[in-house]
Image (cartoon, rainbow, N blue to C red; front, side, top):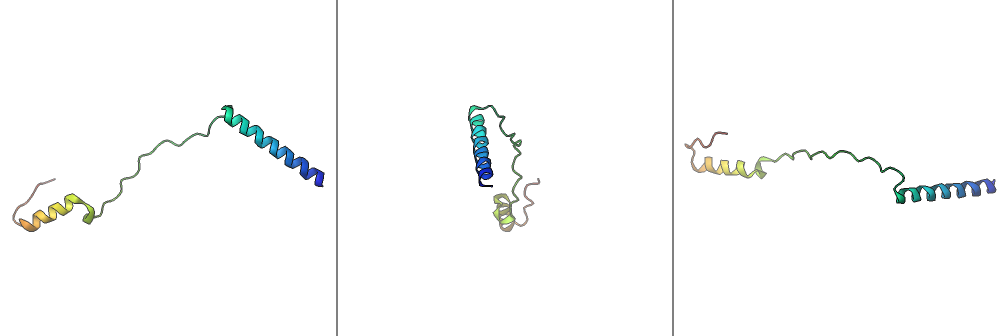
Length: 70
């Protein structure tokens, strides 16, 4: 039984080294990469949005001014 485990360990080490040599030489193809997807837009809270805050200040200072229409 001990001889079998020794042979199995030697076989595993030999296969590992063989694969490493193939990887370094570039014989094995590289793993395919996923296509780059743009990151989803992060939602901006109203209190972090500069345009929103600027519009609130404008409305507070000039309540009769309708402001820009978007």
